[in-house]
Image (cartoon, rainbow, N blue to C red; front, side, top):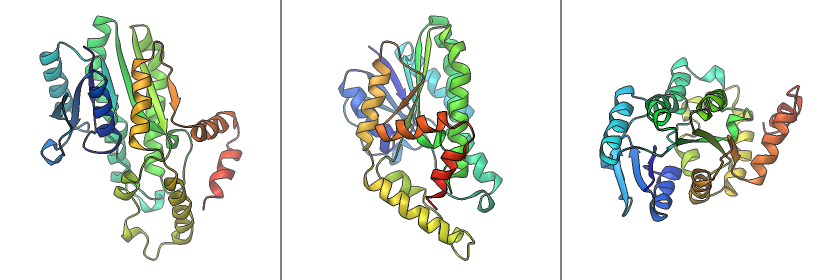
Amino acid sequence: MTVTLITGCSSGIGRAAAAIFAQRGHVVVATMRRPDRAEPLGAGVEVRALDVADDDSVRATVASVVADHGGIDVVISNAGIGIDGTTEELTLDDFRASFETNVLGSVRLLQAMMPLWRQRQGGRFIAVGSVAGAVGQPFNDAYCTSKFALEGLLESLHPVAAQHGVHLSVVEAGPVGVEFAQRYGPPASRSINSPYAAARARFQAMQDGGYANAQTNEEIAAILWDVATAESPSLRYQSSEMVSKVVGMKFKDMTGERITGLTARWI
């Protein structure tokens, strides 16, 4: 049986992925910071506590799953947080918080898993990334910075891990549902008398339009399944044709003028 560990399963993509992977025959270990607050995830899903921002929590949970199941075949690094605001409005702690979960969470998981996977010459790590990891977006400075860094981590480690039979992938998702946007929308305190209020309002209107046509958590979970079961997975996947077009434009934009010209129109 294939053992899959998924982080951030209390809601959203993680919750949907846990259900789909269990339905399709994997032994699923669904992790979250506070399992006592989560709704039941259904048959075939084990729920365990794991805080990706805590070194000891990651090490202990990985060790316990390995002890119980003999190993972990697939890790889906899904836990993430969003922090709204342009740099002037943010604190260094905002950036640190974003990095602790969105980047160092994956680092901790990889550091726990790589020795095990290297020894057995096999394993698969899939990070839930974002179009915001390829294209900078106004009022998403901390989030984009962390997602860019996540891509750099996986791209750098990819050829080294591959020498030991370990596959690394990132799924660049576009707008997904409304839960994430609602939980991490702009704090009211940052909108009062802000010199950026008008630009933020224009960006918010554009963003709301994007979420009106968002993909579902289940659609992203199905993509994660395809990556997890692919014979030869790629490093980078996009969740939709729209995301592929935007990311493709970015990689062809040698000066950055085309992308920033696009994002300037959003505000």
